[in-house]
Image 1 (tube, helix red, strand yellow):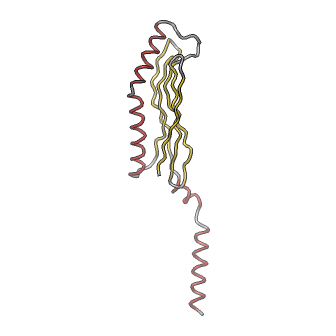
Image 2 (tube, helix red, strand yellow):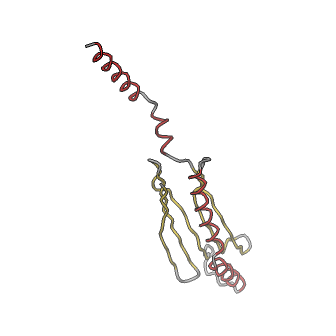
Image 3 (cartoon, helix red, strand yellow):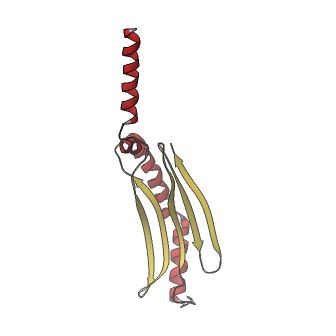
Length: 150
């Protein structure tokens, strides 16, 4: 009978301990902090931005191998985007439009940009939605893609 009482008391103590664990410590272990990065090139017509190429992505905070690997994947995506031949096309088109005064509106600009929104960040999973937009003076294009890391 004494063994049963001891086991019962131990089980109650364990349950009490688990129920009273600080929730913030549990949540911190399942969610990653990040800071948005923006790689950007612009071409100006006087004080007016007429051409933009930009890439936005989150840089995760932390020292683990997994975080370093994820940051490398996202940084490589940024490098590839900024080195793409479309960057040169936007630059050439923008400078051509500026030179011939072809911009029809005060706010008109040519661009190729990717914005990022973190859509899920818990349970040791982070997902992001990437929206790529392209405009070169007539045709507008948009692509959506994403990354999910576990």
